[in-house]
Length: 274
Image (cartoon, rainbow, N blue to C red):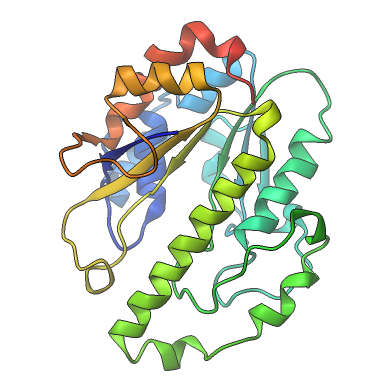
């Protein structure tokens, strides 16, 4: 694993601006620019991956309504909340726990492949999104099933309107949610270590100021996967080994990552796994 810091174009919300910035390699810091980039015909990472022979997909558990703009983003397959088929109780605004999302992705994209193309997938996990009440628990992967196994936790604890009366409690819940999100992703990576996909784990934006208590736009980026690919990117991108980049780590604008990914991996795409 190697880690670094990026500067996000947004904070406290509007995560789609960060997603567009990362995928398009353009600084998208408002809705006007977002509309412009959608209309521009700019090739995203996903268009380019599709042209290189990948099956591109978006796994979007928080998308519950029509998403017409996705037609311009380069995704061949889109799995929104309905397609992921979570049968358990929601965690307030969060439709399903990250562990179910990753399990459904494996079932629908990795286990049920229709061809031999490698996969290039955007997964927008949701458990680290407000209101952070309640926070799921990491369960045995084999026990996930249709999601009903999460019902007891989903119904537990105090409601958001009670917790959010106290800023200290909100910050505690946020920390626990981030801990769950990272624990889940790292457990998923460990589970697939024998046939490791290359994973870029990205924080899209800081929480609201009263939660983050930090006005910087910095977000973490972790690269997990085959050692030769992680090592190459770590050198090219100036990443530090491990989960925590040092305080002295350079902060890279998020819009620089599209071209960096292309420059580092274009010649090795066939060996990048899925």
